Image 1: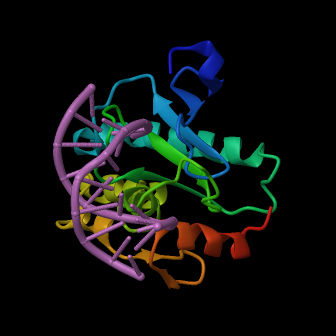
Image 2: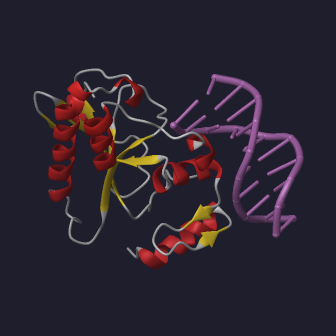
Length: 168
DNA sequence: GTTCTAGAAC
DNA sequence: GTTCTAGAAC
């Protein structure tokens, strides 16, 4: 995030970079300069920052060349791998060689992925983010297409199936 | 987080 | 026989 070559956008509060291992055609991370270790550390005082991160995400999406043809979502992993909170901004094609296993898939297509809007509402209402029990088990559920809900047995089958929804 | 690979699944 | 995943190692 410090490397100017990686920065897609920055302002006084946040920086946007491309994810090093994109799981979709367009995968950005919005990071605050202020270090917040995880969603557990988020308090009401951070709400304005979360809102700003979200609006920066929207701006990045609108500048995307495929804005009109792809769907996008913004959200946080309930249990992130990298400390320092980061908002994922992702197109919904899941067409990427870096999408390789069940964990990759389920972390973006189940409730393991907490919608930015929902996170902001939780902070607004409760002053904190509650992660449900059993969230980790979501990484192991069967592979299911996020568009038509069809269940696929293997990652290669899933990838083949996704081509029907998102032809190049 | 990724890469590698043994052995499960087919 | 090949494909694929899950877990170890990093």
